[in-house]
Amino acid sequence: MPKPTPLTDQVVTVCFAPGEDADWFSASEKVNDLLNANGTPARRYRVRHRSLIGWLTRFFGYYLLDAARKFGAITMAAGGRKGRLDLNATAAKAAGDAILRWRAWNQHINNTTKPARTWEDFLAQHHADPAKVSINEARRRFQQQPRVLAMLAYVGAHTFDPYELAAYQAGEATYAGLHWRIAMVGDVLITVEGKVLKPTSDTVADQLRFGNEACAYLRSLKSSARLCAVAIA
Image 1 (tube, rainbow, N blue to C red):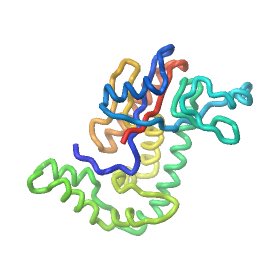
Image 2 (spheres, rainbow, N blue to C red; image 1 turned 60 degrees about the vertical axis):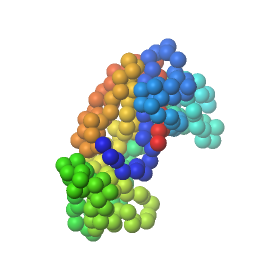
Image 3 (cartoon, one colour; image 1 turned 180 degrees about the horizontal axis):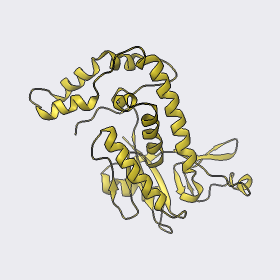
């Protein structure tokens, strides 16, 4: 399916069984073998610091991949042992950021422009008759709408991706729900067994279905399982 150029790279979450080699080389090898893509570590997970021993373990990067520090303490990582990653905090931070972004969009875009047709609508026109509506023409028709132009023109603390218009127009809860799922599982997930989970289309509904399935899979993994987030262009 033809896709617009995303504002950010896609993130692949690679899962490893307890005891399996789970270094950066192993993760990149799985991504290359199954998706024919190369990537880099994506520091997206917040790190868990337990109440009793967290004052000590926060300074050690064991069971973590590509950890980042702030004032000496580890705060983020591209992956590691599931038990050391704070998936709930990762999701909560993404949801909070998404809510702030949606509310800014609601104030500056939603309240000042009329609802617009989504990118998926114009993509459907292209698929229905590619000879009549090329992918470039579909994109031109989508982007010439006043609401989409306003999103592209907006300059402020937030950036509004017009290709997320369907999620924006679905409301705050849906928009935040989509983004906390993405923060947890990325855009694609490779299971311990080597199965590739991904949305069946670019629609918000299919992205949410994928997010639900992938999050349920993550919850089913033992705390000793390993995760690694890989950003691919």
